[in-house]
Image 1 (tube, rainbow, N blue to C red):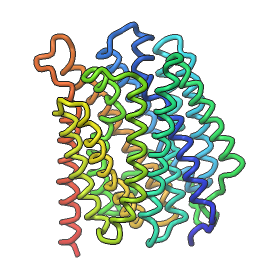
Image 2 (image 1 turned 60 degrees about the vertical axis):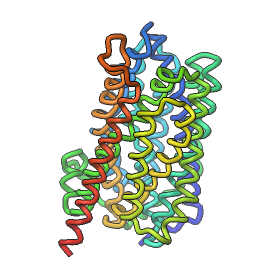
Image 3 (image 1 turned 180 degrees about the horizontal axis):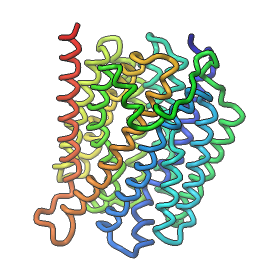
Image 4 (image 1 turned 135 degrees about the horizontal axis):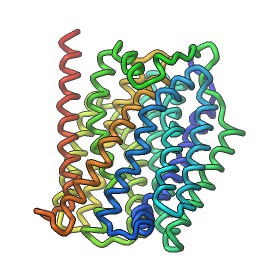
Length: 406
């Protein structure tokens, strides 16, 4: 039995847009804020940026399954509101940080409560059918892209008035999002579909054990781990990479991330709608990974900054793979375990964030510092291409085993 709220999908979309915009505000100015607090160069700031992401990821890994399971028991709405409030508090710590320690405290709080996208994905599963699930996930991913148009563009502009200003605005936006959700966001999980909270399942190992009952889901998750490591190269080092290689300003970085957001909307609405009638989810996933590999290689090796923009188009077109994988896994899970699925995915994505940002930022620092054996700012994107190739191989093997088992 599905929840029937004609406006439910619209509410989810609006929450994701506003939340992502608040998150995207901080990206263009975070490198400069870290550098100012440490009185250090951009390579050193990149290392600390990686460890800040690591702190967030540890908390995500531990608490995402807890929040996902809580949403299966108490409903999506209260867990989503908690997540939004936690991000607002995080932004206040970043806004008024007198030293680097405050940044780590803020990121820890955000990691504990950070489940907005996972809960939104569970809401989509609650209100979707087999016929419209892929399109609905495309719309949510497009909402994520729209937030990335609004957020980085504003953040890059506000950064001209001081590195703390965007964080104050992000805190205000996130709190406004909390108030919007409190008054207008409907519960999407019927009480009849809820299940008892179980601590044995509300932890990373317990959640993975439950998902192991679904062989295809388990195989796809392994593929998603590698592609997730790769995608962290964008949020972890894009600002550092473009500053180092092409001397971009905060404003230009913000505009480029806004361009990424615009491309995401086009990819997740127009492109997904064009492709789903002619390609199944498996074919969509494979095509997406091939496009992402091409984009990463162009980032890594281009000597001309204009190439970055067609490379972004190719890379973002590849994001259809994520929509396809989400649809495949959601279809394989019962309605009352969607929160657990999304919580487990959130935990695993948190696990990749334990690995990816330090990997990407340190590979960047290793290839750009003054004594680097080989100067190569594109090193993180070469690593990302390798991770995506591994993901593609695992995906193809998973579908091959499924075909044989049938």
